[in-house]
Image (cartoon, rainbow, N blue to C red):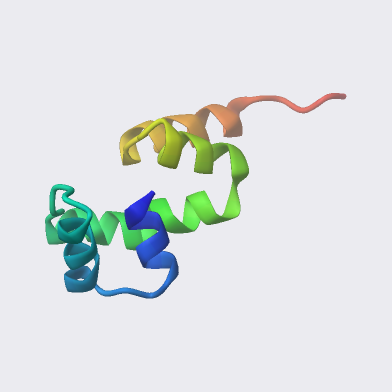
Length: 78
């Protein structure tokens, strides 16, 4: 949740890692930050169910992709 909130505030990669360090959490690598900034954050921000999965359950990008794929395959009520 700290990464999500930090990106929501517009913090940079370095700022996010400083916040993680202050919270005694493990720092993230730059590629992981990029995945968060470009994929996980926008998805979580726009979808309540995926927010819960990403933030509360810790889903990674491949698991989010699988959920989105499943959603696209479901047929609607006719």
